[in-house]
Length: 211
Image (cartoon, rainbow, N blue to C red):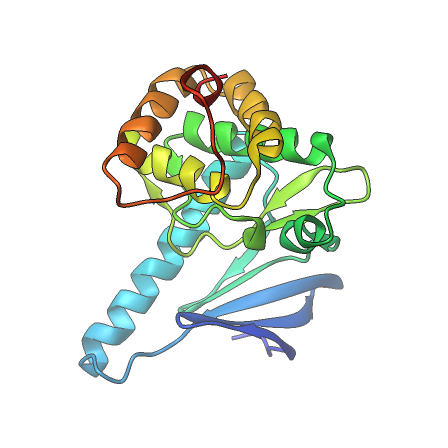
């Protein structure tokens, strides 16, 4: 195992550290042990999920999506290139996010879905914006390979919940332009919202919802 560096972030499933690897600024994500699980099963699950996450990130890059480069996969650790920039969530909070960034974030999700990757947590908190307004996707801990239209619709919904109507139109434009089955996903999205389980702050007319 390569030495980890300074703790950067901590969540329920993992800790993220700043480090360097082969002279490259990097981050390492370490999947955490769960005390309520039997030790052998816990180690096996963490290892399998670590490998799966790294594999999905590799597939995403092969599909042209902007995601960190996987540098090394250890038993429970993923070492990846460090992406610097502004958090999209912070740009939205300050109301300074650009249409280019919103559209690019839709394009990136379309690239994932074209590779049958459902991110599972596609929110502004997991998007880093570069100075040229390009959006980089991080945290594939909940991602899966699936052809499920519903899983893809949930990805769109998670982003939509964070956007106002105009912002969502820019996002959806990028999504439609990069994913050939976007119409089917947006149609399923309307059905998911109609079930009442999910609520968004984006109030759209029927025509706008699939614009």
